[in-house]
Image (cartoon, rainbow, N blue to C red; front, side, top):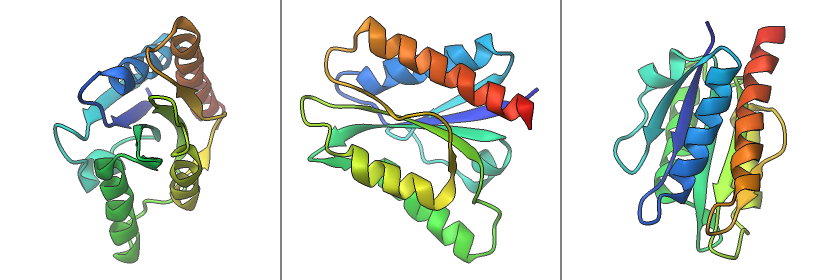
Length: 151
C-alpha cells in the first residue's frame, strides 16, 4: 500500500486543513494511506519524509509568500539534500489557500519544483473554502495515488 505524507500549515481559520483533509480522502479512496502533519503543530522530520512514497503539500498565502513553517520544510529538504539524503524526486501535489491575494503560488511552486515531480495543477482557494475546491483536492489526492500505482 502506498503512503502519502500530507504536509500543510493551518491555524486561525483552518482552511488549509480542510483542503488537506480532502486530499487525504482522495488518497484513501484510491486505496492508499495518508499521514497528515500540520507544521503549525510540529516539524516534519527526515524519518517522516523518507518513510513515504509521495507528498501533498499545502500552505496559506501569507503576505504573498508560503507560510514560514512550509518554507522551513523546504529549508530542511535543502539541508538534507546537501547531506546526501535521498530527498529529491518524489511525486507531489500542491494546494494553497488565500484571503484574496493568491500570489504565493509562484514561489510555492518554484520551491516544490526543486525537489519534487509535480502531479497535476496546484489547487488554490480563497475564503471560505467552497465545494469546488474541496472536490478538486479530493480528485488531486486520487490522481497522486493513481500516479504512484502506475509506476
